[in-house]
Structure formats: C-alpha cells, structure tokens
Length: 305
Length: 297
Picture 1: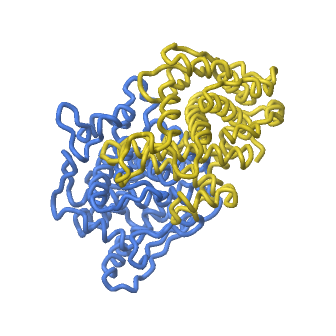
Picture 2: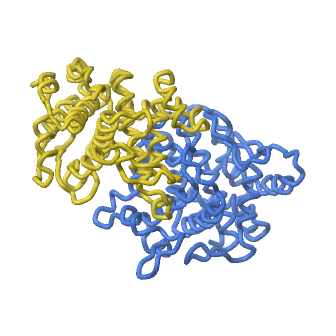
Picture 3: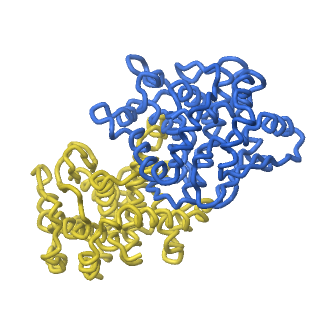
C-alpha cells in the first residue's frame, strides 16, 4: 500500500533522523536534510514552535535542523480537520505527550536528553551492576547509538502524532489508546523501505528495553497503567515489522521476539494496514502524497552515525 | 440497552437452580422468532472426558446457546457465525483462529465454577454472590469471543490490540444493558479476573495482555460509565488495595473535565461508528429489548 504513511510519517522519521544525527554527532549539519525539503509541501493546519531555553544545546540543534518544519512538510498530504501544534519544550519530566485540549504535541527536551544519554549510551558507562537479572539500561547488543537515537525519537514523535490524528480526525479506536498510537508509529516506520525500517524498529525496541530497565519491578500500578508494559510495547512493534517483512526482520525476531508470538505477526500487520486504509487514508491528498513520496527519506550516511 | 439481560439469563442458567426461574422467563416459543432470524449457528459438542459431562448437560438443558443465538439475532453479518460449546483437550480456551467457530470450552466453564464462592466472596471492597461470580465471567467470555471473531469477519479497523478490543466491546455491551445487569456482570467478571490473576503467569510476549491488565481495563471502562456505581473499586479517602484501580489510572478513566475522552466514551463511540450503525438491525434490537430477560432483577 503506497500510503500517506509511506511519506508523511517518513517525514516525521526524517525529522527524527535529523535530530538524531545532531544528537549523535553533537554537530548539527542541517544542510543535507534541508536541501531535500520541498517548499510547496506545507500543511496549513500544522503549527510549529520551539520553546524553552533550559536545554540550550538541544534547542539550537533541533531548531537549526528545522525538525518541526519537516514534520509539517511530511504531514502535508493529510487533510487535518483542525489546527495541530507541534512544540519542542521543557516539561520538567522525561516525557512526550499530546494535549487534546490545546491540540498540541509536546516533544520534551528531557525525553530527547534521556534518549541520548541513557537509551543510546553504552551500558558500561551507566553505572549498573553486571549481576542485574533484569534488562540493563543502555544500548542492546547489535544496536548502534545512531539507531537508538533515530528510532527512539522517531518512534516517540510518531506515537504522539498518532494520538493527535486520532483526536483531530475523530478516528474510532476499538483498541486501547496507547497501544493504538504505538501501532500507528510502528506501521508508519515500516512504510519507507527496509533500511529505514530496520533503523527505526531497532531504535524503538531499544527504547522500550530501556523503559523496562527503568521499571524492573512490575507493580499493580504498572499493570494498571494506560500504557502496556514496556516490553509488551516493544514486542508488539517488532511483531508488526516481522509480520510485514519476515526476511528483513528475521534476525531481529530471532534475537528479541518470543517464538510463540511470531505466528500471529502477519495477521497483526494486516490489521494495522486495514485500520490505516479505512480510517486515515481517506483523508490523504493523493497529489501531495506523491510529492512527498518523491522525497529522499534517508541519506546513506544517516544510518552510519 | 437491555439486550444483554438475555445473555445474563443464559449465564445464570449455569448456576444450579439459583436463578432457574429467571432462565425460565425466556421460553422457547418467545425465543424462536429471534432464533429464526439469527445468523448465529449453534452446536453442543459432547465431551469425551466424563468429568465435563455434567457441564455439557447443564448448558444444554439450560439452552444456553439457544439464548445466545436469540440475543445476537440483531447482528447483520455477511456470513453465519458458528458458536459451539466443546471440550478443549484440557485447555480453558482454544487459540484464536480467524474464521474458526466461537468455542466456549467446558474447561473454562469449569474454571468459572471453581473460582466462584460457595455463597459470598469479595473483590476488594465489593461483595459478590455465587450467582454473580458465575454469570459475569460467562457473559464476558461469550461476548468477547464473539467480538473477536466479528473483528475479522467484518474487517473492522482496529488500532491497538485486537484482544483488548474484544474485551472492551464485551464490557461496553455488559454496561449498556441496564445498571443492575451491568453491575452484576462487571462485578462477577472482576471477581473472576482477580482470582485468575493470582495464578496466571506474566507472558510479555503474548498477544493477549495479562489478566490483571484486563481486569484494570474492565474497571476503567466501568468507572467511566458510572462513577458512583463502581466507586467501590477506587481508593478514594482510603489506602489503595491490590485490586483497586490505582490512582495513576483512574484519572484517565474518569476524565471528569472531559468525560467524552474517557475510555468508556471512546469504546462507545467506536462501537457506534463501526458496528451499531452498520451491522445491527435496530428494529430487531428494539424487539429484543422488550423481553423481560431477568424477571426478578
């Protein structure tokens, strides 16, 4: 399915990549990404703003990259019923969220900082004992720092965008809200080629593994949370990927996905595809979609950071 | 919506005589017009395990499937849906397969009966009678199993976990019958889920969430539908207990400032948009509602 997701979300992913590259290198270079932007691709209903100065370095890198502008560009094919605001800000906590009362997606610098300094860090540098039985914080074996940053930020941005689209487009959700947003994120990650998809999925799974490491004891409060447990979320997204393209994700599934889950993955992917086709695609402008699809999403160097 | 009163009556029929009069309220002649229009095909499969024979006989004698068949008559489906009771080889539930018959395992019914108190039990602050503990989980399981098959049969767009979607649809129907029926089925299901959650192993890779998560999801939808009725599950002005809906969740469930954003409202909106307006014969549903399913309730 050549879909809006293929591009619009790719756009978000690109934006994330841009941020990721900046975070990873600590030397933002916007030229390579900015050159690919197409001026006529702009969603008039998407408003972007960079706020807060507490995280000065992050603020500058994100702004210089034009990350939010790229999100607007990538969302250009979607006929949003109302205004949607994207904002980078300091939240006081490690988080990212969609506020439906203000129709604003908040991407918190604290979350970006945590991804850079914990999820994408070497486990040995995080001061955790090797005797720990549970998941360890930091990079999983086989995941690069660049993948961890790019995939995590892209995943978070896509997840929150999923909430926003559900709300603004009044899309019915039969599943739980947070799982639904994860499914949007996972589905979109898989729509712009196997190379990008692997980067995104690996980074997203690595992040959920780190979330699990942050909460080793599964309490009643965690079981009652509106989000599924961290590893449940990671498995669900990896399962989508394996369901769409078993060859590309065979190694990751063998390494991380419980064997009992794997037979249902093709069905789970078809479910996401069906949901996208019936609830989001009808509001996508096919002409703008083609334009976005013509954009180069990933540059060769992005995956080598 | 009072239609689920019927399903409750079905489940009540399981209870050995406690509510036999209620089950008898719907005689075969009353149900026949609905059954004739129903697209649900039913079958009781005899078990080979003699220990399951009494359950099989009870379900058959109570005409449980016939009642479900009539209750679901308003559903307009593109093809018949098979609903069976069967022995499941020691499993309490068969693995989900699209297009397979909806199967109520005798083993699952046995588990419900085993978990039920001899007279009175509690789940947190809530008191549950034996019949409630039998009715609730049976109704929940029947409805969620039908819902799960309908998701695939009707190719419903599901964002999120389809297993959760089936649970949520079941909960919504249970809540929309009437406050009394809702309370009975919600409390009974909560009792069973809480009991079963004590022994179910946490499998993070499983498609279906852990039963403790399903328990909290059920309560979340319930308190969103009627805060006062289900406030017994909220630790307000008291210490939080292990089966209370924790504070970190119930704010999301209630959405006091914007109730239209509660999980209850969300699933209700999805049900209306995706199912009721397209696949339900509303005049027939209205007729189903006119029946006094629970005469003494």
